[in-house]
Length: 169
Image (cartoon, rainbow, N blue to C red; front, side):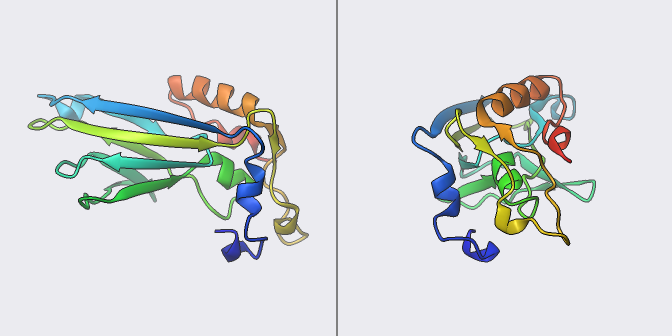
């Protein structure tokens, strides 16, 4: 990803800092007789650098919002889904986008997933790379301490709001 932006090869890795965070989350979505009324997980973006998701090989449910339409993420057995998070969106000055996604329930089958979230050291600050800011493309996001961003992001998530927009300049 750094190469695509003409940054040093280890730019994003170097941003992680001395004590980056990793969280594992296991999610169980039981079958639901009225899936049109119940989200497995409401629409959100991930406040992390990246999320690696191991999804059920036999049942879908993950959807991504694009141009106002919810698209099913295809089920491909024995693969991982990688979701870019808000921290990459900020550091890439909006070139890489953190997708809005959700999980829908299924009327006939349960679903299980395991997510690994990777985040910059909470004591560090992140901001758009100086190499990606110029007169033609000014900084789109202000500098933010990761600890503060994560705390407020999850507070907004619990209220069904997207937080990254509040960092825009």
